[in-house]
Every structure is written in structure tokens, then in C-alpha cells.
Image (cartoon, rainbow, N blue to C red):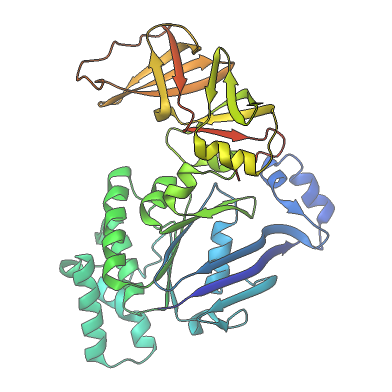
Length: 398
């Protein structure tokens, strides 16, 4: 068990000295590189990464492809050199320590099992390299197999296993080492949706049983929200926000976090923040809504004045009304029946908008259907709207 500390960690991939002109020509049209900073030294993949991970904490690094999360994990593992900054495990600086001496175990996306070995041999391999006693190896392998419910597969080879079973073997191989830190790099991304759900539950149960420090990388926000004690949201090599799943959902730091966390994603509208005396209101189309007391206080503490803003409202926080009035108008494009709720895709205020409407209202009556082309009126409460600066993207409350 261990604490992990990352202090001002940076990773720069140097420019190739040979064939620069040729490479530049070849990559000229690549948009993927436009989101990364290119310095005189090379491409800045991770910039000033700071994170303190407590003993036995489950941390999830999440973000879109190319945001630097896997690079960060690989630096912790020792598979990538750290360009600058300090990495400490249990207070010991390990920047220059070989991966095998860091007392970490890593589970990869593609399982990385030896095809010619049985499940038992794959799980026992690292212990054999350490020349552990045979009885200790057998005990640890069978104990891990029991935890992961793969005892019956110990004599099989990887090709005879399903994807979920192979991933269990890869996790088991890491468990037997009893590492200080458990690293997982998108371990569920190769599985189908049903297996992913099952394996998420297995990882939660595993975490409760082996009680060690986890650093988990994923691009799937559902995994991040369900697994992590805290989530680190990254974009373009930079941390955007760190917090518990509830914190980042309820209080997104900026437009990127607001749009990235939540399914379906948050609706964004061009609106106005208006200060009248000591009260704040948001205006959108025909609606003027007073913000809740806690939002009023945070905006007042930050000395925010009336201005054009981007308003963020989650689909589940929008209320549909039968009668027009001080509301916002939209026209239904598509209506998706999801069982307990209908997802309405609208065109409202010049933006594509999603509203989640329960199929049964509070009185227990079935709601009216929403056919394509139907006009609807909607509004929202002042406690669930987020106010962002359109220039910086920052949440004006924080």
C-alpha cells in the first residue's frame, strides 16, 4: 500500500532531427496535433501535472483520446521517461528507478498474456522470476484465481478463454505480486458493453478485497464515475479538474468538463447573466430565472457583473410545460423512447438540445407523446443552471 505524489510532471516528445521537413509536409494536414503544444524541444504531451494520491485511494484519469492520460500512467510505471518534475511513491523519488523496482503492477488494454503458457503459468510467471518458493507461488495464484473466479480455467491457455476471462487472468497476474500501486490502462475497452458492465462490478469488488492504491485510465466517463474515489479530467495534456464524481458532475470547472461529464451531455445556450441590486438572474429567450442562494453567494463573492454568458443545463434538469409563457420554445426533431424516460432532441435557441422526460409524471399518469415536429415549451430551476464565461470557458462561480 502506498501514497503516490506527482509534482510538476511534464513529458516532452523531442522533435526528430532527421527528416524534419519531410515529416512536416506529411503531417501538415493532421488536426490531431493542433491540440498539443509544440515547443522548441518538441511536443508537450503532459504539462505541469500535479496530483497527490492517498494510500488505498482509487484515482481515475479520464479524458478524450490524446489527452495525455496513458502517457501519465506510463510515467508512473516507468515505461516513459519523465522530462521534468518529481514522481514519489511512499515518499521515495522514483524518476530514475527501473520499472521492476518500483513495486507496481500494470494491467494493459490488450491483456499481454503469454499464449504458450497456461493461465496458472501466466499468473505465476513474475513470482518465478523472483524465485519465490513453490508453495508460496501456488498459494498466491490459487488465492487470486479464487478472488477472480477463474480457478476452473487454470489449466487452459489464453486462446481458449473469452475476452473477459483473459482480462481476469491479466488482473490476477498483477494481484499475485501484491504491489504497492495497481495501474490499469483502459483494461475494459476491448470488451463488449455487457462484459464491460460486469467487469466494472468485478473491479469494484476486487478493490474492496485487495485494498491497495489504484490508478486507472479510461476515456469512458461511465467507468470514471462508477469506479473512482476521485476523478482527474484531462485535456491536451493539462488537468482540467480534480474531484469526486459528484463534485465534477455538480460543479464543473469549465465548459470542457461540463460537456465531457454526463450522459447525455449538458446543453449549452448563449444567454445573459443579469445583476439587479444584489440578486442574479439568467435570461434565455422569454425566461428570466433567479439563481439559487448558493449560486448568488458564489457569484457575489467573485464580484461578477452582468454580462453575456454560456448557460449550461443538464437534460434531466429541464422541465417541459404544456402552456407557453415565461418559458423557452423548442421544436422536437427526434423522440427516443428509453423505457422509463423519453429523450427529446430539439432545436431551441439556435442550439441542438436534449431533454429527458420521464414517461410517467409525479401523479402516476402517462405523459403525452412527443412526435417529430411538435412544439414544446420548457424551463429550468435556478439551482441547476451553470454560468460560464464565453471567452475563457470558466465557470463563473469558481
